[in-house]
Image (tube, rainbow, N blue to C red; front, side, top):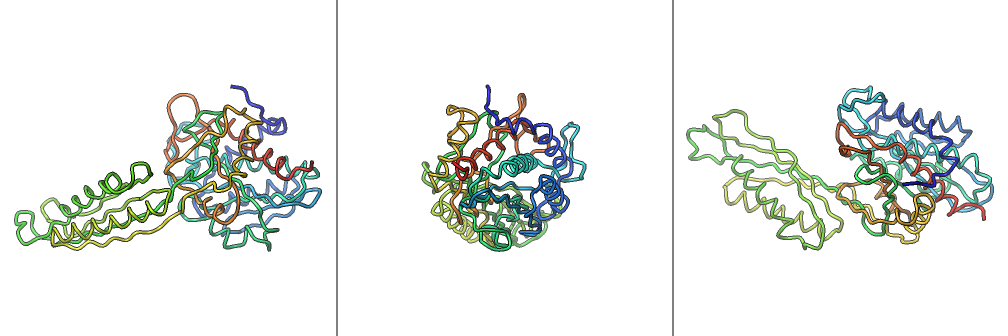
Amino acid sequence: MSFAILPEVTALKAEIVENRRYFHAHPELSFQEVQTAAHVAALLRGYGITEIFEQIGKTGVVALIRGGAPGPCVALRADMDALPIQETADIPYRSQNANAMHACGHDGHMAGLLAAAKILHEQRAQIAGIVKLVFQPAEEGLGGAPAMIADGVLEEGPCGPRVDAIYGLHLWSYDALGDILCSAGPVMAASDRFDIDVYGKGGHGAAPQGTVDAIVEAASVVTSLHTIVSRNVDPLENGVLTVGMINGGCNYNIICDHVRITGTCRSFKPDVQETIKACMHDVCCGVAAAHGGRIELAYKYGYPPTVNAYPECVEIVNSASARIVGVANCGKPQKTMGAEDFSYFLQARPGCFFFVGAALPGDPRPHHKSVFDFDEDAILLGASVFVQIIRDVIGRK
């Protein structure tokens, strides 16, 4: 498959790969991206960009590229944090930090946005508006996007002008290199967490009479939870409930009096989300009554769904992508029950979130796994689309 990667991006390939591998070898966890942010800021200064704002949303970096004529402000975003995973891949740029790994492609996101920044700064005279570069911390569960929004990244103020539209991408190891997936509507799910505390009445394993076995009680909860989606959610809708952890018991011959069950719920629509939550409450109440125990449910709302609600922004991405990979390889729909805090940006501003196929040949190397990796040419594709979006939206005609 041949691509029309922008020549300016191709010229930076060695630098892009070097930057990506530096970030990969030096990962930092959410809200701990101190050295990562410093390195990003230093590279931006090296490109000649002077308006750089640090410690936005705690450890984020924002920079401005002012065009040669007035116009709208368009933001481009890359996330910076790593995951608490010990890398096992045998690669020369393997993580040097224990229990920290770029296992979701954020190293590539940063390298791609840096390349786009360098090109756009060099060609700023051809821009009628302002490009706001957003290097965001803590996407992996701790909410770096709302933290940056709280610090004013989208508004007129210390971080520059008010953002009119924002675009973000995700390198996607599940799809082939050359595919750019972008569609209107929900593309990533709401991500909620639940903790269920199951209380019984302990005793000797040889004398169960008079006890309430919290393990048996919890087993009934888990079995019932897994009927919620299949029997209460419209089959034409989407919902997931997963029990990820069960902890309880202290010895082989003691009837347990407390079990904790922890998991996640995913959905695209609020009515599905609320149906799952309500049914979980009913299950907990019913099982507790049946067993004579007590069950407490703590349901925590997480990231909202990521929704491409502006068809005109989707069309901008697909038009830019078509120039890079061809019409046949872009505009494909993509929905995943994974979650993304880019959702908060899209709740506040028009914009679009899209996926760039990045699969390596051979065995799959999925996201959030200790062997995760991707085809580095995907970074060039993403950077090219970013540059083309700016040219199409605020390029001087």
